[in-house]
Amino acid sequence: MIEDFREYKKNWLVGKVESSELLEVVKKVKEEYRTLITISPTDFLERIELNYFFTDLESKKSLWLKTDISRENSKIESISHIFGGANWHEREAFSTFGVDFIGHPNLKHIIISSDFYGKAPFRKDFDIEAHQKEVEKHSLDIASNFEDEFSENSDTETTLNWGPTHPASGPLRLKVGVDGEEIKKVSADIGFVWRALENLIERKDFVGAITAVERICFMDNTNSMLCYAMAVEEIAGVKPTPFAEVFRVILGEVGRVSSHFMGIGGFFGTMGLHTLQMWAMDSREYFLDFLEDYSGARIATASIEAGGVRFPLNLETLNTLEKAIEYYESKRDEFHSIFLKNPMMKKRASQIGIISADEVHEFSMAGVVARASGVETDIRKDEPYSAYEKFDFKVVTKNGGSAKNRFEVIFEEIDESVKILKQAVSDIRSGVSEGTYNLEKDHLVKVPKKLPKGEAVSRVEWARGELMMHLVTEEKGKTPYRLKIKAPSFNHTMMVEKLLEGCTISDIPIVFGSMYICQGDLDR
Image (spheres, rainbow, N blue to C red):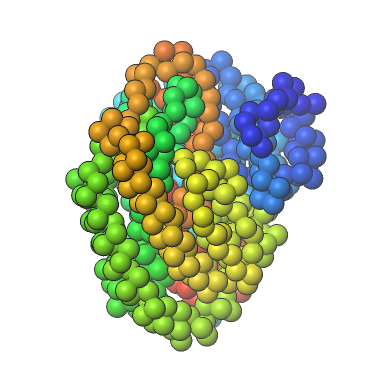
């Protein structure tokens, strides 16, 4: 039933199925691959190709299935009753590419604003210029539609709107149906900062796309650039130097630490404990000093591109990183005492937001959220990239799956990142001393401006979990033909709907804060 079945790369298989046989094949796939990563449509004008990516978080094996559907008909059976995590991914493909998933339990538009409903804005023949000529009308319609939805309520319960622009939720709205204090139903309304990022990237050259890719989420922008660069390098047939690979690890771990401090701060900030949030942000600033010393910018650094890293490294810049590590380690025990022994944490967060290991697999939880439920998954170990295989670190896991456990994982992972950073700094200093690294020449190898026709899948362990990109290029292409971005906050927000049912209103900020959601990668 699967045609052209072959090895794509280590622990990856790829094959093609007829759309009429997809459902039966997927049922068998579930026996060996328990998790759907994402669904990626590509519009080839004469057809739409659907790419389904599956993985098994325990065996570390992955599967890529392709199937074609007609552009005119654009119908295919839903697999959401087989893989729970497919629910929102099918809704996204429906909204952006107009794919009708037959049998989906709630095939409503998601992410896109209401002026794009029914228009399939990611198809190649969508006329964005004509659409933008009516931007004022669209804005009025969006406001009117939102006002109508905002006032929705039923005869049996009250609907509360947690957000948008809530101090904790940001530009995200949770429509919360309550009976008194008890939460009966939650519906997440996302897309308030939707930027059509995947489509935007198609209008940039391969280097210029970096500035869009790193804006998936400012909390950890270095790892998103790395993921994109790896996909371009695979198609171009280019391999960075050993020095660039090690320095990419440093940039990636600094991005992770920077994000984790935001995660710690955000966890307590959602509960109104802003002093603790500011203490976490204080330590983060020292790591941003290092990024500024290297790239000239603290957030939007544009520091990683295909072929390596953008700028040569001044060895003295590593002193700034060592200062940041030293500052954190001087505060670490105090942080441990203040954060982990906090009464709110011990009494409240340990009892709510519990995710089982089975739910991690079923709904495609990733990163901190997965590891807090005892699932040992980390792309740095499962599918090593850059120079991670050179360094010693452990995958932090907990077994409770509660909001408290997720916070504990974030906190302990900072220690593991610091461990990696120390090893990588030592590696670079030794390499320079021994003459194996040339800091002026080894930072970047040339990548052609035009790429051959191809496809690549890249994965990295982002701060919030697995980040995956599916890149498609044309022959002598100057821009990405298609870039699908799968980021963890999408599935994690979908899970918030499930977690909050049966809780009380006061539980919302604790559960939401523990899911480590970034609005940027949620809405893209």
